[in-house]
Picture (tube, rainbow over the protein chains, first blue to last red):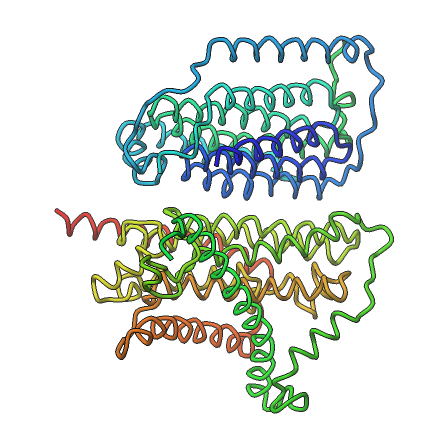
Length: 163
Length: 105
Length: 344
């Protein structure tokens, strides 16, 4: 069963590499959708079934649709590689690799391997999340609805041709 | 079902870290502004994975609630960000951030 | 027989269920096209398919053979990978949502209970919505990758329509979730069984909103402007031919079947109906009732196609956002008020 985690992980990493390396934005967007679905699969394996389905519905099914539609409408085509700065290219990748290696070492050294925490049975289910969301986190919940209202107004105003 | 096999926390964090670093790499090295925006979403997802891993590890559901809020905020950010990109495209006719850079230096 | 471990039994049972459901669904989809042509023909006072087999019953077979042997044309400037991917994606996603639909009750086999449902997720209803929202991609990508005007417009309109009505679809169902207290489809039917009343009695407005939004989601008349022949040549599938075109239509019919199954489960009691007779009949009769109810919905879909004119695109969008969404929200408000008043 745990082998599924590594399969989904491999899919996510390959698709993330594809997002970063593809020239055309539509291929990057499609690879990002694959990453999102792979991560949703991982959430299922980590007892977060409600969050997994929400991720697919909201992130992969609405936000990425927005991205794909905008890319299709703007139709800007492939990206021309820029010849801006040699320094960033030759220094950037090794620095990132060094950062990655260092953080991996920290994780390996200091993260606990396996613990014996138990939790009540429907751990990531909608009932448990709802109980928490509407009791302790009700204020952030209401604030996010206000945030979404502001975002809708902002998006409409920004994309209008004439105010 | 409490047990999908023992997935160690360090493996979850390692996966999250690799995806995060890939997102940072894309963010720093790509020139198309929509691709950069997508790498931001990649970074947010890596962080979500770390949150869910910790929620499972500590047996507290709050981590998953944070993921819920991050997804909502990412949706709002994507909507406004893409609106800005569309407005920019209308004036500059280009999606390359080198052309969108109007500061002197 | 007892040497069979539980996991092995589960795997084998699930594979058998998947095979049966897939075969049944493919047959239903093929004969739905025959049914549609016959019903619309009779509404329009003509015969419909009549020659191929008795009353045209072998017509789907003839259509299938025709699609297989037609020349496969790919436009020169089309984005090949996505052009080939889009119909397969739509087809796969359409069949994926059947996995959580309960067709009946359970029976005992080899000392273990086998439910007539491929899998019972705790978040089954949300799973169906997740698959539906991914289905928008097949249309969006099909239109874009064809690299041609009409498909691009058709697919953009269709994507915008689908994501707008998805919202009303989800809101309409929240009333049912509130009164039955669970997202699992099996639990919703069992709630209706426990209370002896179909949910349509308690949620009439929810049903109307759901069904209207569902017709818009599946791109059927009166919401089928994105693929209407008189408006946009063929819409998003203009540049597709032979097997890929057939896949788009099978995906559309399968979506119709899924939506009808969901409507019967959520509002019309699913597999509930008078059950009598020996044990094997007690297992098969619920399946029969379920299929009969789904058939009524499919007939209603086809009936509407023969009867109603189509909406103009701006009428369609304003209806979805300005009428259906507020009505859905009002439904949630009233339902929650009634539930709170009853508990208090």
